[in-house]
Length: 467
Ligand code: HEM
Image (tube, rainbow, N blue to C red; front, top):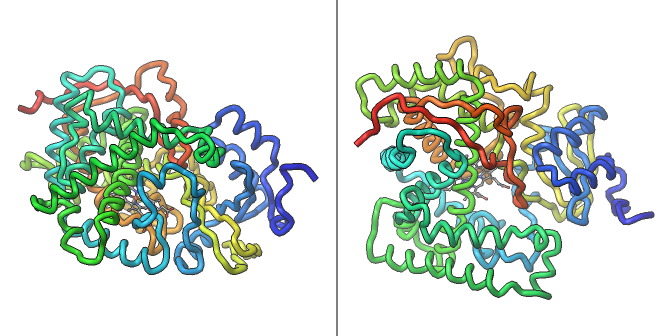
């Protein structure tokens, strides 16, 4: 028996061959490529709905079958989120009592407050004004590092709509908040400490800890300010819901930042990328925007709803380069037999770490023929007007069941607003010899995010800069 043998209770499960996996880790391959190259072909060849994958010193069950994914997601009391390693510095930043990490009754309480804050208001006009700022910064266009611009846009979007606070990520290249936030996230995500969380105890990183505490303090100050100065933002709405401590309010605000900005930015980068690669799709989407806006100057909830094709392009971007590669591990205290759509059952012993693998479901040829191709028409029925309802267990960028993303409507409108504005005011193409010319190259992420990195795009103005 060697160190890569799974524990006895898991050995009955099909396991992805270890050598190609180790090679993949050693060569720094990103998650989405590894899934499409190793996990998915292995599972499909054997007709398996779950596979065992070795990662970070342990064996984890990945779910690739949509039926199992759905059953697990629907039953959140049987399948709570697993508690991640104690020592991780992430907890110092987000705390443990917030909507994304809690389970059971605590989760119900947090989720109620967060959902009601998110549904009070759809801030489309705020997205429009941030879009204008972004375009002003883009000047006359040229070669732009689009993943950086989308990140600044979504940071300001979540800052202004969630906290009612302007972090000046778009207008100020040296925004102190952006610099500090990035430094903290880079520190937390240091690969060495992710692989060996115990190092955090043995060799505490004082500089990183100081940065985190400073940043948490900033959020605390914003919270105190907000109590006296109510606005039209989620924090104000949350404060109107009783039953949370100051610490819990603050931790949930940090959660909004972490969950809300990279994900949406990645989706926006992918959207522009696929339309750059497919000029005919870009052209058609633009024609739709021009027609839907008609005499309106700006996107609003009514004209955005007329942009079915743009919406399909966004949904297809979220499928093909899904920002959250797979979900946070779940584990059940009880033994469970799970049943795949092909009838196979798998026995999962108590306390097994289970991961729902979104990328693998989005790239399964059985569900999505020609899965590697960007085809917005997948989301239409006979005509563009009759939008089909895709089975929610096959298109799951926002997850499934009670714990799916509470901000999916917010994020979709944020994406639709910027997409419409972009199509109206700009044309864009991928530079010749772009490293992304075959497929979008995502950055390395210890948090299972698949986000295009260093993605330069050439932009050309269609209209005069807005005043
Ligand atoms: C395109 C953008 C987005 C994508 C693809 C996305 C995707 C997801 C996914 C897959 C989950 C489930 C994670 C899991 O259970 O393991 C989730 C949860 C969550 N998301 Fe999003 N999200 C996006 C934008 C946002 C935004 C803008 C916010 C906040 C303003 C947000 C807030 C949250 C929160 C609070 C949760 C935790 C819900 C819970 O555990 O009950 N997300 N998101």
